[in-house]
Length: 332
Image (tube, rainbow, N blue to C red):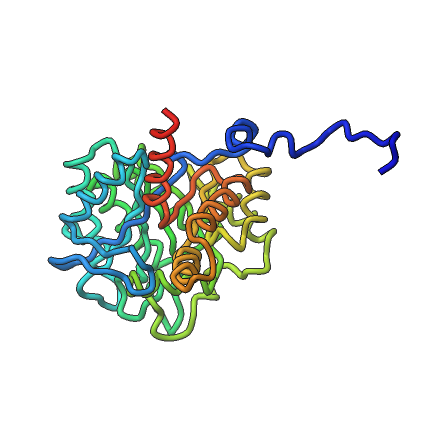
């Protein structure tokens, strides 16, 4: 190197020690960032989920104890998914006052009233055909499905849900649920729209967990095509216009560009759902010695937050919150 050349700025100066790296870190993960998904089954015992190591389906009573454990870690919210014992063509069990989600919500609210409860509103795990709506002439009937989703939303609000999360990807679902909730007197119940829900292979572990795989066809006719960024923004804009309080992009890992774009365009909180496939990839590769689980887990979550997500829905929520809690205690 010539004598006259001098480096005035050396980036490594602020990378040289752990405390310096912490000092200049641009993005921080805290338990407040997370929502923990929980599965509630209509049975008397909980069970593990083979495709998602460490994740379980809880009974309606056990889920309250799990939710309390999550809340004590500083995680402010859970997102509930129901897995009923019986199904039918129209998913009638989804809106029953004694349904699995409704019972679970009531039990959670008794034990942890401060916890924010979000609930997934869809028909896929309640229908015997596995689709997200009512079938007419071999296709999902959008407008009939909106009527069913509205009934589900009201039943969840009556049970005590704070934020309804319609995931069926029916046109107009946020507006229909907002009107139904308002008419039923639940004006303070929020809506988190599954606004840009991509038709993704990453959902397969969830479908095993929720017993919600379609028995015929696929969901490409109502879930979004993976190639369309502008369409995703249109979907988000429509949900906001219809009254969504929070908008969601799902999955997260392969769609960081959509998260960043939405953050730059919209003034609503942006949620990103890091789905079962993302979780299972890391768990499976770690179990085979192909990567370091903790490092990869944090790399995933930092990427999602760095892209612009205000809320991260992740099956790693509890695990990460425990690590962050220990680190905070260690630092004093």
